[in-house]
Length: 424
Image 1 (cartoon, one colour):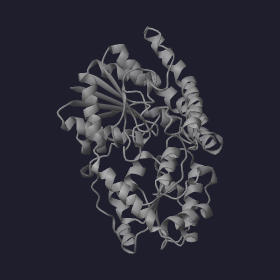
Image 2: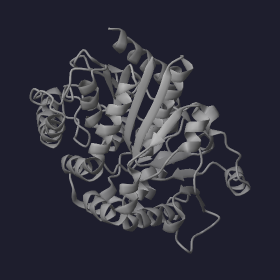
Image 3: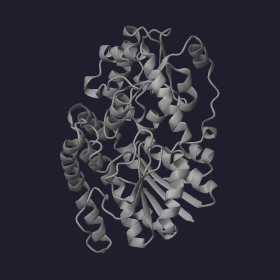
Image 4: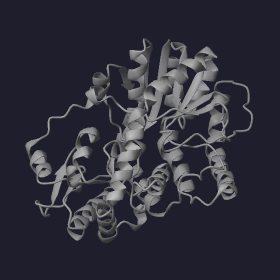
């Protein structure tokens, strides 16, 4: 088949599409990936390592408007509830590139036998219907209502309460996405769509929820077209790493804690600096050695170099197995990497699905109690780091879950799901 894939979001939204594209290409399909990175980054080297054709677009807007977007993100992280954060994400990060996504997706659909799109990138589904090719949406988190779990950021309080929370979440998604989808359909002179139903995300096509069935068994009250297919992990061969001498020396002195908020560091300079200061302070208070991965601009000028090592980047699959615990923001990819390395987590969720993954790891006994970004201090973080390090049961449980994840093959399962969607 000719398969077109369209992603949008942070690096954590792009990398899974690359992993899937690599597997589809290995299965004999002609694959093309187009993506918008909301940090304005491109990933040519990673695409080359994956052996795929991938093209970035739309990123210049985010580069040109970085300061204004940062101010908005900072306010959102400080004050907004998860529902409000969702609305702001669509307004600030999707709306400015929605027309470009629609145009590129239409062009890609015309040369494809099937179009696969990020579930929140609503123009991709519209483009597929406009051209008349099969469409598969790809969700990197559970987004569909169910009695089995609450919306991200909401407490787990039982099936009946979950449905009440989902009514609110569905209303938020309907208000945010319904008019936007209708406006693009009108531009293309397409028939008026039925009322937007978040349980189908606005269409009746198939959806692959690319999360681990070990961590998230498929709810039995989901739409029959939705399947849990497993995490989309890049092949280890794409992430070869020659360990720099300073990192090797630090690791050789004993397993440290790893700490980073990944792509969240791009949202607010002020909050990112405060986060890094919390990492440094927590290292001392917890009597721990910590590797901090963050941009150089956020690093303090004075710190204990025997206790803290700053790095730019390192492949998690290579570094995490040599650590003692992982402090992270709860992104799906980092969550998976920590478990595969058998490491306990200390999760500080900022937005979106990060709240969900923080709760899952804690409930499964593989993480300390989540620490919300609004309550992050050096002392609060140190208490959780110490709590995790002093409990071997967390590491054992993380290793147990990681072993189960290692037996899954999300890329193959998702590729087969797409193939079946086209055949049916």
